[in-house]
Image (cartoon, rainbow, N blue to C red; front, side):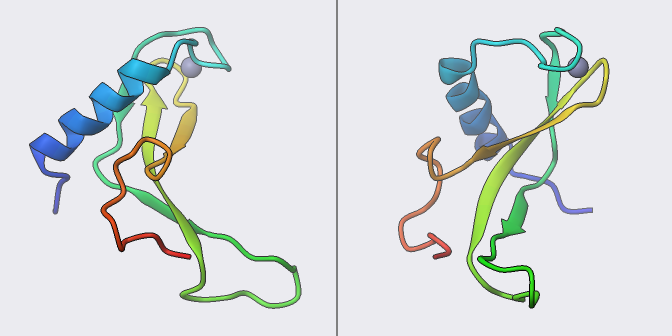
Length: 88
Ligand SMILES: [Zn+2]
């Protein structure tokens, strides 16, 4: 099973620690785990047709270690998206 490189995980955790101030919105817990991969949700402007391979928002994913609530943080905003890798 492929994993995120350790240094990438470290960069994500440091970026989140520098910005995230609130506890889990569902249970108030402060502990979380970083998912071992990215979400890359597609965005679309209508309901009529599913666009495959269209624009997307690559994001880091954290999971509350008490209730399992999943949060997504856009890599672009965290400054972690490589240049030329913007998927729009
Ligand atoms: Zn929680």
